[in-house]
Length: 383
Ligand code: UT7
Image (cartoon, rainbow, N blue to C red):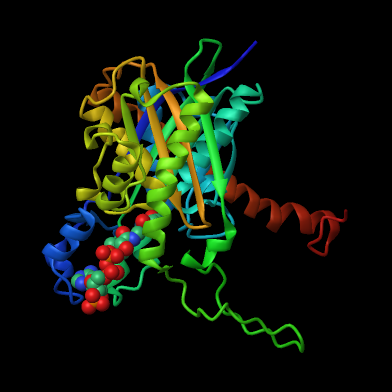
């Protein structure tokens, strides 16, 4: 029997701290006028010192689970699309698994820069279609503020922090994620990059490591080339995915593109001969949040009443790699009425999840200190 991956929950998180263009103009040589005219961005949210990609991803995921009315233990797969994990391992997804107490979930991070959410959605939808999982959490989360050069006005004005999540649920009823196209072109990898390895001198002859010429873990971008690439691939991937789904642009209620620059989207709309009203935009208030931008925009589109049951929506991502991709999703849910007290009450389970996690850590420590030495006398467990 065919299995379809339906979106049954969605949630977003934006840090409280809002940084306006005017505020940035006191940090670098820029102006609200330049930023707004060239990008469409007015302000962005910036994570507080105690916030991480994982804490924001958790907040978005908890809200998505509340909308889906699912217990975290029903989730079997957690994928976090991110380019700004606090650790390469443990993955952000594993930390989210722990915070949620999602005791039956496999969890991993996915790296496809700003296309990451579309990639992750497809991986989770395919796992559901194959019958290997029933419910999955797909999250896009980024703390871009920690990987940009705040002295470089050509990049620091563009990005913001945040997280968005959806819950996918398997069903035999046709709908949900209907078609996806994913593409990449590594020859353009140098156009938009973020080094992952710190320069770590290796005191062994022949093993010295040099860092591609970059010594800092900050975003490097050739804005003009990325701009040209983006306008082309938005148009081509929408075209390709519609062909795959056997639909035309007339069948599409809304297109939710990665929110990088309003001018990129305007150029793509012209190429596709589509009115701008078909495209959902929220970058004015969020900036470019990389992998988080599409799920954040999706949540805002639902909030604004832009999606009705049976609407076809196209999600389209593009970014570093180079990577790009698009997905057609049949939106087949009416937003449930999730009342606030109900949501707040259910958050008690996350306090309990952290408690259980502490207990498990304590257990491990006790085992290491007491059980093993007493068994072997030398601290090893003998096998
Ligand atoms: O999420 C991944 C995808 N990323 C993107 O999609 C970004 C794609 N690229 C872009 O969105 C645009 O290329 C930018 C917004 C980054 C730049 O816009 P642009 O129209 O291509 O500007 P530019 O780079 O050609 O710069 C024009 C001028 C330059 O000055 P000169 O050389 O003409 O004197 C820049 O130095 O604007 C200057 N400039 C700025 N001025 C004020 C660059 N950044 C700023 C700034 N404030 N923040």
